[in-house]
Length: 416
View 1 (cartoon, rainbow, N blue to C red):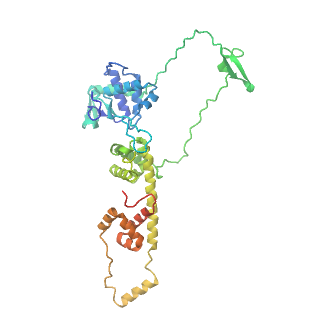
View 2: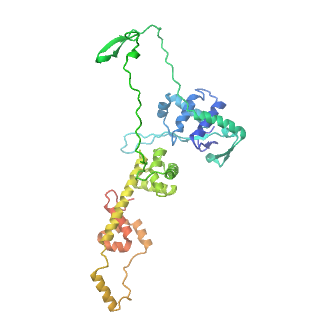
């Protein structure tokens, strides 16, 4: 069977519950016939429960060994079982990146998987789908399949538990003669046998009992609501839009894939609060990549932290621009003073009001914006020479914008 997501005949599992249903069906149908190694069993179902929690599904072998308590070879066997039965397919195989100049270690990438529902499952239960390829969606099911899928749902609702291994000792059954030191009252330590203590009391009864009172978890004060990176109150609509943005960004922006889905969704909630579309959010992430060199010069270890930093920097820059804009507007002298009133009176006296005042030569708005985009150093030089002339030519907003960028020590004007 094809084990790549691009060539498989299955469809992507929309949620972990339906994926566990398909895994239990494959387990009960005995579709996997092993030629060597373990069978499709409880360990495989526990692996399914672990992989279900990962978004994106990019586990390392060491992580699965810790979660399952199995050896490396056992984990590899059960991953092969899931791929062979069509429940799992490769999206990319783990590699090692070459060392860059000045890098101290080789960076390794884990394999990325796609959770799938095999086509044999749809045929056996009479499931009708709509769409093509991996993006097919379930739209109906036969009457016979309803009973089967209900039973599979009950099995999927029960999380598999790890079976405890019984440790067998080769003792002869004779009582242990090794003495143990049990703390007694008064702070004095006495050494007693493990068979009895005092008047037929075991050492377990003689030990100091510990309090089993559980501490109540600390809760947030009543009325306090969760807030985003920029301090916006989180709403359900914001979380839904952030979830969509995170899914689109994960597929289209490679350098953010080291962050989990929840981390990426959380930092994109502020963009959802602005009313942005996923396409605009992806374009903004591209601007961040160009500004910080993410994805091309380096791959951030914590992409969500970089996005949060960019959001805060953008907010601080906007506040600085607004303050600078107000300062520049305050520097323009008001027209309502005695000298201007006297000049207006003289103009009316000599009938000079109808004479058109000479207008300063200026470029059209389109040429100013193009010049600001392709030659930002020219605008900064014009601001340094004469702020008033630069305002007349480019406008208050554009002058305030580039004056703020020039004042920022972390920004180099004209460097892309």
